[in-house]
Length: 436
Image (cartoon, rainbow, N blue to C red; front, side, top):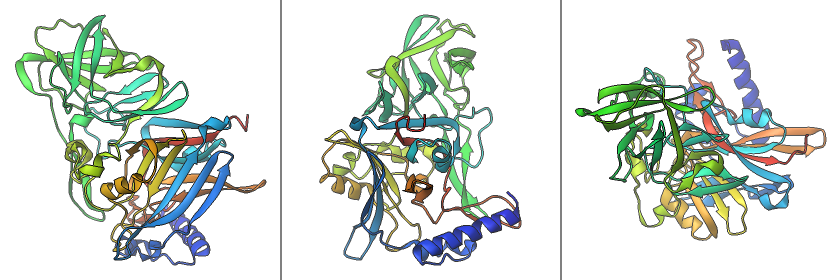
């Protein structure tokens, strides 16, 4: 997109925002420090987006100082036969708005789990941006190295379960037990390393203030070990790509590196199968990806191991600060919800919500399970709202302040309120086959 196209895009978005809200957005460079145009309390309203799919909007007061968080809750009644919840996962990130635009049966979309986010890709890393366990149409695209919950579809039903990064894999029909490099598990034949075993740090940078830099990380070196580089064929079959004696392989190689005793006899090119991870039989899982910790964890604790995961960067994702956060949960009536608590960085009154405040709120909401998804500037909801039979409009909620850097000298900043940050996975709320 050229400089002139950027100018026209921003002018159109400013006009739309001012017409809809009556508030004026300042010049883009000023948005880095002045985001007062987005400091408003959302009025309580419930909209039927489609039979069985509701959008509830409103705000939550957080303190005596007048601080608040706007929320956007998608409710999907999967028991009515007219609606469905699906997961999407892909190698490279995209705007969620595309997921709604490209399929007329998608009524709403929201962001998903944590993913590899760096301003530069490490040498040799595959394209897949998803962290931990990633399954698409029954094919494994990513393996877990940390103990994280798993959100998945089994026989068409959305499930969530706690998962330890461990399992049994077979290489040429010989079984080996394994554990993730960041798992609490202690006993296994081998240790698995992936990009989620790596490290990303924030360093000073012009324009953005900081940039995410991927650090080179290798498996431990020893004459007593060998590294099995795991790769995936185009049809999805895992295989041994290479054997490296003595370790020292990049953790970003293949889709994973399994370190085993040096006495292990393995031949490159042999087939790898993984029928089960932790206690979950993968044969019935169609699609799924790892997500953040349970909401209930923060009822009694203020920290979590995810805050010390170097692969997620040097800013704790679930610390005690207020930022935008997304929650996926299933209520006791079997309905699936996604709730976004919006936040405006630099604001004194609506920065977002803390994990403890989320946990306190959910003590009043009867749920079967509730988990954190990726928060911050990834948190967003996009809806398809039918104004009438002839007019269907896409709406974007959350992170309306979002500014990105398109790297054009004449146009270093771009206000992108609808697109926001691109994500490689998320949740789709759909109507069943209405357009078919």
